[in-house]
Length: 283
Image (cartoon, rainbow, N blue to C red; front, side, top):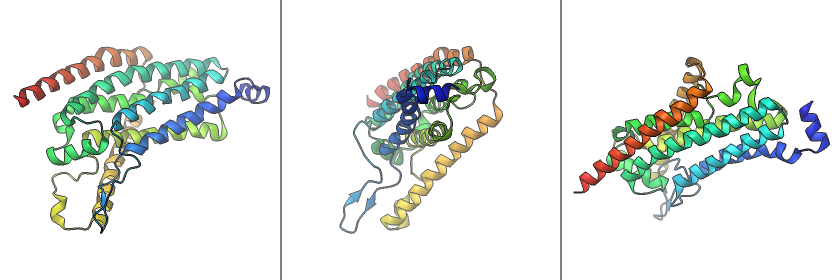
């Protein structure tokens, strides 16, 4: 049994454990820069942002951590000492690299509109001027498709193609190490939904409503805005599952052609058009 030989013989044991641990850690860290609700204002007038860290390079931090997550799949597949796992790990790495490019290009168009990488300012811009998806529908769709691929979800679940690879990159895993891989996938779904809602769908903003006119105190506004954000995230989680039940898996060549020949050119066109419109509006 390959798992027992690795664990008892000591060959790649550290990497075999590091793979799922790295996948889980990177999945959790990305939640630190997401604004989960409207800032809470105390009676003394102090403003408490309801996010762990409101850093200036917030969305860049998300992308940098997500890019590290590919090492969890690569290390786990290679350390398993199994050809099926190794092939799946190579698939996962090439898939993530391919779809990070159009995702980043789609994001640049949003940054043109906000002029900031801070997640809180991106949400604030949508509260004042409307959701970015209204102005960037193509970018939002590209971002969502890339999020499916980044999370290895159907129809992009090539690293877990059981009919081809006999369970994929975590074939040799069991117990809690396998649980880490599976939990990390669903955490990535949740975080991807949260990032997409924050960038394109107003974050915790309630559409077509002026919350200030309600006259509620800061506590209840924070509770309501958090509930709104969770509702939006739940909708996209449902869409993730809905697609899994509906669309069959792509072939690997179709996966790569979609990323390199379709999404990247579309994202570039969207970025150029957005830049031209922003320059024209400034005149």
